[in-house]
Length: 409
Image (cartoon, rainbow, N blue to C red; front, side, top):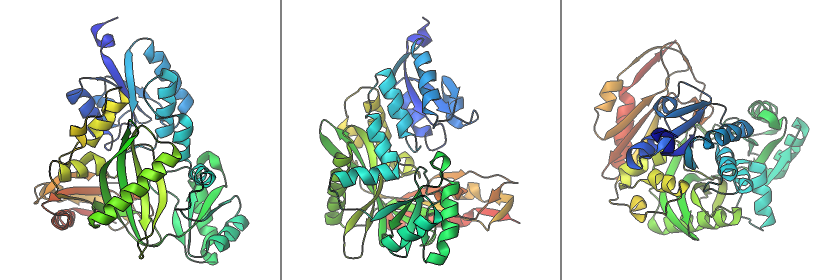
């Protein structure tokens, strides 16, 4: 066995920009070899990794088989993701290769919205929306009457809010149902219809270790319209400290009930005008949206990805990784050009040099189509900025967004 083969390796599932901070931490901080898995051979992580395996990150059987083969030739000590909706694949690889992780059935409860509801029902948890499963348009209409209009329709298995929308009236249900089904993959016509939770939306990120749940961060999220759950951005929370503690305890309760007893995870919640907290969904991984990757380190000096990555390779939780060294603000804001075909992009370097700006990402190029903006996967460009306070960080991000010109026709 060569020296390269003897080096300890970590498998990272997903190799997009949102996962790249984990690649850099694995190599530069932990001195690990990296095995990357992604369907796109040109993804940045595939070019950075020591070994790149081109496969669908959702094809659990194919990924497990490939990783078992590699385990005969390489020392593999962990499997990880962040910002990619692949917790089932991560858990299946961990189980097959006897690596640290959570049980596959727990990952499925988090990934499958119907299983989440059903399992929490079995545990008598009531802090979530009313719901019904619908397999036809007629059932969706009946479910809408049960939940009450306006309601929310969702595919059973997707991410970035693809296929999700607020349905105002019965007359809107047919088009909404067809859109949800179009994003449903192998789940066919079965969709969820849920009670519409009105209020503010938030994400609580945590890490579990030795039967203790540690709060990593809380963010406020913002959307393009009540109908479409396309995030315009996020920022460090402006909720009062007492409410933040309440949010964390709620999220901890949900994580315990669902069975996440190890590693990093996030819980998305709604806070009604009267202060009532209800669950939207949860995932057995760190978030996307540039939150754990850039916003949290910028605001707090913490390194949540490093903490979670260490756990995934069998190391203990390092409290220094998750400690807030300071309390500042951070914000992510998306750019929304007029829908059409991109004819020019300018102002990106000006945005990068603007006050407080930490990162600028442009995911579209000339000739690409942008819009309509129906879900968070439709966003073409982003600015991440910091500031002494959240208000300043938001202002810095929004100023930089205004400098980016994506012209369309």
